[in-house]
Length: 138
Image 1 (cartoon, rainbow, N blue to C red):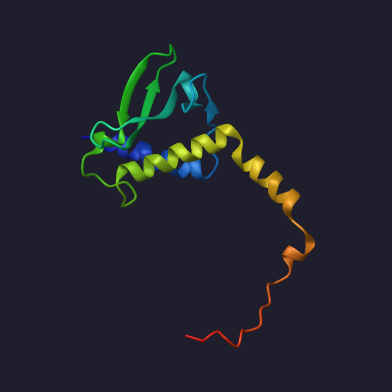
Image 2: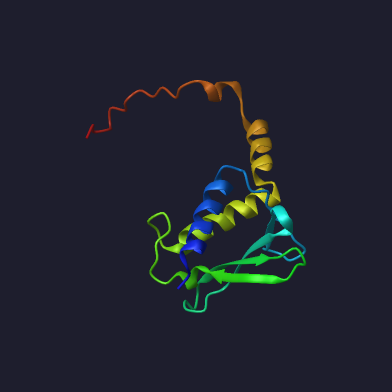
């Protein structure tokens, strides 16, 4: 079972990733994303086939020192019955992974660009619908 410091790390990583304060980047490996921190430390987040669920995946976080050596590796499966933000660790770590992927791949920019191209001024008007005589108000 993971210790309290790893739980705290995942909680803060989830919060700061959601706030856009973690600079996730692509790596040479597909589906692996990394973030650099001070003093040369970095972390990578990835998925792998689950060790316990035949059809599932585990989310893996690997921490590196300034020389690129692995100093810690853990997955959602290492947390046992612990809860992170009241959820199973897989849910929180999967959300971090998704945020890391979207950030590193530039998904927000792509979505904003596409919305801008699809948007028309009438989309800003409220959608006023008149009740259909066939509808029964419940």
